[in-house]
View 1 (cartoon, one colour):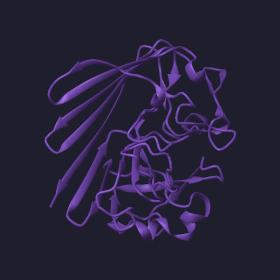
View 2 (cartoon, helix red, strand yellow; view 1 turned 60 degrees about the vertical axis):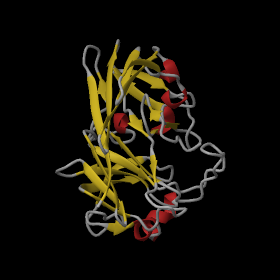
View 3 (cartoon, helix red, strand yellow; view 1 turned 30 degrees about the horizontal axis):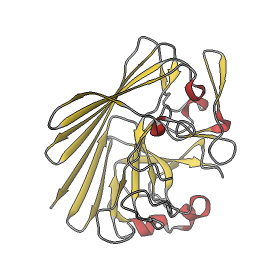
View 4 (cartoon, helix red, strand yellow; view 1 turned 180 degrees about the vertical axis):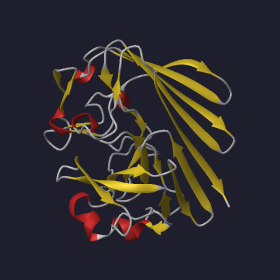
Length: 271
């Protein structure tokens, strides 16, 4: 389906076997991804839900959604606010949430970008302040191991054409392109460019899932358009995928009484 520009949750990305344990209790989620795993919050995750507009101005809108206890299997009634704010050339996205019971949460946005008039993004260049990439298994789920980004197939620490990365044999053999979680280094920032057009993304999340639209999208969803392979690239800021099942990853646990807050800023500009 592509998840075009949708808010994804309650937990974005993959959860191995659709199962996790929290406070000694095991929760079984829908197995809607790669056969036997949970993906993007389930088949009726937040991307399928209608949000309420609770505030708006000429340059901002604040949306609210209340996810019921055990909706898609997740514990706790979760109240989520998503705020979009236009600031000149920047779009700021704020995620704020609270829960009635301890739960897990990992909210992202699934916007796709193509800065050119070309049918794909292979001639774009990408640079990010990344320290590593998460190794994945045959179902694209992190194993808990890290790949040092320097001198790897994923090395975009300096501006690198995407065709060099996407078409590398190490990248192609499982995913047919980029579908990997990158962890940031000193700054949580990346930069995509094509000729004089630029997109800079900054976030408070520790990492970002980068997906290069490795399969065509044949449903005519936007302007009756069919999207070919590599038509766009997504940057999904988030905690590490399957983090709840890998203790040394950043944990996506939200305790009752605590406040969840993350921000992502997209800056589009020309040189």
